[in-house]
Image (cartoon, rainbow, N blue to C red):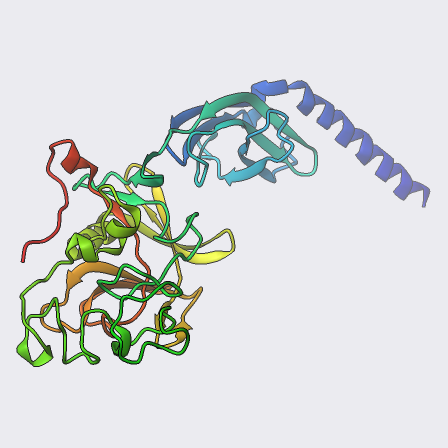
Length: 360
């Protein structure tokens, strides 16, 4: 018993001595800098003096702590893996708030001894630009098209927002623009269901289309294949230069950005990251058909402004699940309720070439 106690005491003395040596290193053990700051992200580069760490204690964690308070009382910790050859590490911190000041510091935790911190840095994220009170993000796309940070009808990225039939500008729960036929299961003036009976641009069925049609077997042919701005939910509800994305816009977003399924503030969906590091979040808001809603939290369904020419009772939509993202030309019908994410063609206002509505 005495031998075990003596061994334990000696171990504690050794640990205390090494810890004291480790603490005496001060901030010199972690060197760091903020290398880049965007609207909602920052890049942090650090270097740790691994040679100053006691060799028996090989479990090491490095990273950066970020807080809006200088005392780091509500800090968030972002881990990184050091480069074993150069003792360097890099961390990208996402989902910061635009136009806000932050503090950050590199850290190294050597288990089970101690945590040491580098110098504290301060930085401020860039301001996002807004039009009519709605914020857009530059994702570095070739078209120079900017994307909204949240859905039409939402106030934050994770909110689902409103559901619209294609070409309608009033949403579920709002006063309907539909026909007098079979207006729904609730008040005759409120849209409570999505079907052909109360769809604005038909006479009660998908074979009686009254606008946006390319085949006579589906109703009146007008050859229109892109929504007029008067029928664009983003343009009507948000005003300014906002509009719904075309099929080409969605394809550009899918091909030019990295899509990563994640949970954001408790909501599943896709983080879409541009080459410049900026990102948007598309929540899995599901879709509405009839008086039901499905796939909430597991799938998203977003309208484009483009008609499906071969199947004019449908319009091109973007559908996604955690397993993949699809641009669908033959959806379940224009009368269904889907999400709308607006875009802002700022390059056009500046006189540059940018994305625009497709010609008929």
